[in-house]
Image 1 (cartoon, rainbow, N blue to C red):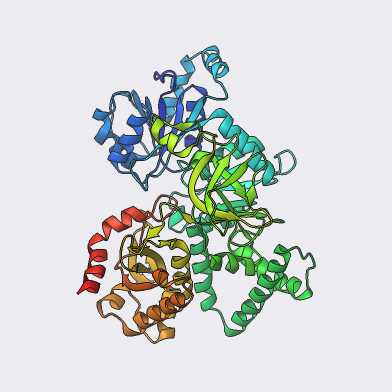
Image 2 (spheres, rainbow, N blue to C red):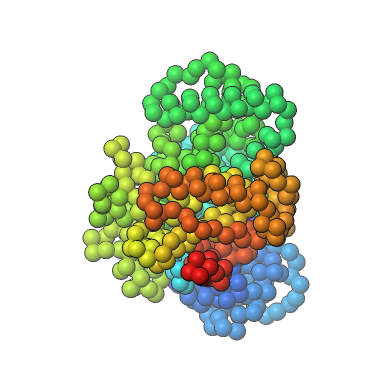
Length: 578
């Protein structure tokens, strides 16, 4: 069908919509027809869609519905290579030249002889580009990461073997597709691993990340599940708020079981294989019920990646006998580079390299911390039409420079300590990695949803804070009502507040004092005075994708936050000078 529409070799087929069978078909069809498969995030603005479509010289655009179609129609006049638009959900609301429904699009292919397609497939080479992953552009314009046929097929094979995925002929793995397919993590698992190992894929509802995912999990009961940290954190919050409503006896039993679970699993992590009697009892009374309630009763592989996760969240799930294992990589490495395994993991480590991959710690300091560099067949071809940018990340010896800082322990496990670009350099010249401080504050003050350290080139560090609030299921927009867990926190510290606005407008004494107390406790453990948080500000709204502070995988977009709240940040420092 793509060929009938005039898809030219090495031109893009852009796909803008939520995960579906049509997404998969368009993606693989584009590749086999000699084009590039290019995902566009559904949250992109019309201008951001235009940038990607123009950058990859898109001939064909596949959109989900009328809403996404409108974005493309707005910029269509600026897309000289575009030959057709296809809409795969909802009836077409208008007739336009070169606009097709999915069924009409499928019909087009009937006139193209199989031999024509076969010729193109046979001419494809392993080292040619087949797919473009656009980095979400937290700094500057997005870059088109070129992945070759060999990149995706080799990585899928290596990752699946490392994960010990079962071949479908032996036992079929069940996976839920819900993370954005324009992101490498979802694409590697849902499309490439699925094809390589015969996984059965179930599509979640489009509002999965706004709350419906848990229902899909209970229905599907996946055997493998990949969640970004925010998904695990939301599950943790929900489970804690349900736990808070249970009877005191149930709470006591749960607390006992979590203690046993954490101790046993930490010992197991360190190589002890015995299973104590109290652990078996706790498994019967608590762990099995919890797993069933969240649809993970068949899941043997629970993974997290794409952003840092807190130790607190990892320990929470470990205490319920759900080891959440970390993997690490980037779009430029076709997805995974290191991974933890059920029999081989350490808390807060991203595990060890996949077979066939190598890691180099570049210019390590006295603690062994340096820039993490990758090598292997999973390393990308380069950025589309950006040779200079490619040279910035791939050195003369072929090492991919990740921009992440990390170190190995004595057993070869990789620990990430921060990002070079995220480092805050104070006016005194001290380098401060923000993530450990932010996570410590969130752990010390459970009402905090997001914490972001600021203070680049400033005399001292400050922090922007948001409170845990309920999110509108339809729009994903953060509301004003506090979550049950946050309300419980307020009651504990002596506040009657139930809304974010109540706390901020009255500068609620009890809550503000509790936050200050938590930050003071974190400051006491600071490595130096320069790493202490001197001032903080509560923002009226939590961070969100629609607000522009979070990327599509819920990763904090620091430059965007600094830009959006520049007046408030300036005020913090202006007040300090007066």
